[in-house]
Amino acid sequence: MIRLVEIAAYLKSPIEYEGPVDLDSLFIRGVTSIQRAQEGELSFLGSSQFKQHLPNCTASALISPQAFEEFTGPYVIHKDPHFAYAKVAALFFKPSHGRSGIHPQAIIEPGVHLGKDITVGAGAYIAAGARIEDGVVIYPQVYIGEGVVVGAESVLHPQVVVYQGCILGKRCLLHSGTVIGADGFGFAVSNQEICKIPQTGIVRIGDDVECGAHVTIDRAAHYETIIGDGCKFDDKVHIGHNVEIGSNCMFAAYSGVAGSTKIGSWVAMGGHTGIAGHLEITSGTQIGAKSGVIDSIRERGTYIGFPAEPAAEWRRSVAYTKRLREAFGTIRELERRLEKLETLAGKEAE
Image (tube, rainbow, N blue to C red; front, side):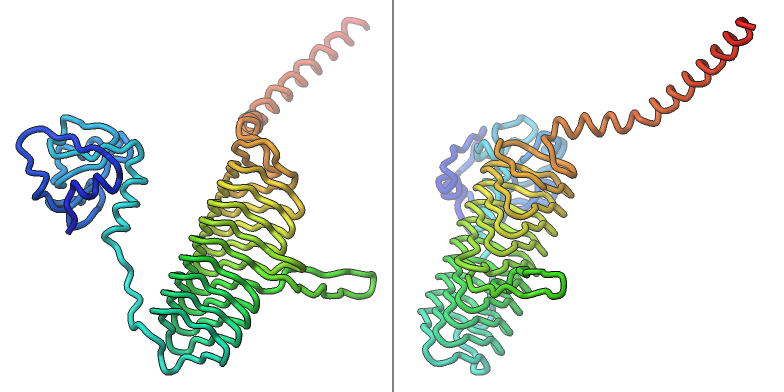
């Protein structure tokens, strides 16, 4: 239970209310949607389309950019209610990782540095020379290769694999099946043979990075594949070798980035988006779902389609495409009229 005044202080937001409300004794036990919120719970109004639920809302308080007469309870005033909701929800939701400490069936090779308050599950393997910082949680059946560094308070879920030499920052979250540091897709091809290029680099991941299930980030052919602080990758995202990604990027499921591409900060990619190799994507770019980027993007904006182009141009192209059937019919009609005119002119000439 947390007092509403403490939540408002945490968000650095004022409280607005009418009528007799004892804020000092108003406690919140959790947060939920405006349709389901009950007394003792906090909800939020993220969009005006949900105003219809206000008259029937029984929440003890709402997070909203302004107060409305339909709901007479206290309001925590915040310009971005959805963001504020996410921050408050984190106060109430503390994930449990089950058994703490090192399981007797975990295999930890000599020379591993183990920090304080770590958890290592059954069947996990940590190779020689690895460094596991304070507060790390390693679930069962996780593989940690030689010389790997796992930053403090990171969580690695079952069947995560981190190949030798790779580095994870603090508070990283890797969901099941994610593989960090597998070989990049590097081959030299002649007329008669495909020769593998040794992938001798590593993957370096910053702080507060989250990888969904089955994310794959390839090790560099040389030097490093780099993932900046705060990046969030959905399930089944693939990052090729020697890619460099700035901070706070968000890639939706099935997105892929080919080798040696450099991506700035705050770049967002919709699902099923692909970026070709050896390109540059400027910071702040947004790329729509199922787009294909085959040229560098050096001007910030929203891009859609294949090949990806500025959103306004893509929408015009779609509009023109939809009009092609109508235009084709018009052309056929004009052709028939022209044919009749030519036939008539020929008869008159005779």
